Image (tube, rainbow, N blue to C red):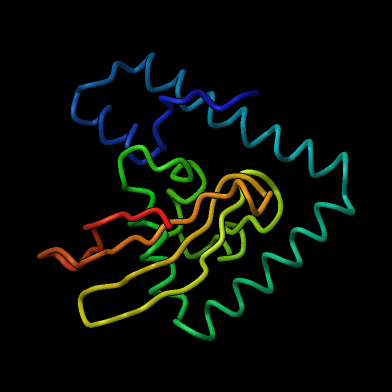
Length: 165
């Protein structure tokens, strides 16, 4: 199943539904698409367990490095802020990074498209600059961005600037 280009992440759908901007039927239809996408990924992992396991190991290694360098809390906060950026293509995979019962490596995608890698984080007080790669696993076609996040008045990171590199 191809991901519809206008599909919002579940947390945004829920906010729209709670605000009365989506009907119950629209909300359920969009959430059904999310469920179908998850089921397709599970079937794909079952059909190719070796590749799935290798991806798991790569993601686990990357998550361990991120936790050691920056701390799990800041990495999860950054992922949540990225998921809130309007039109950010990986928001569908990062929206629940704040759920601590889901291991951090589940949000990284080393080789499985669409890939998502955090290359670097620079922390300077209330500001964080994160270098990410996402999209194609082909190094020539991958999208590289530098996103500047700043804490708002309630302490959450919000995107301030995005620069493709």
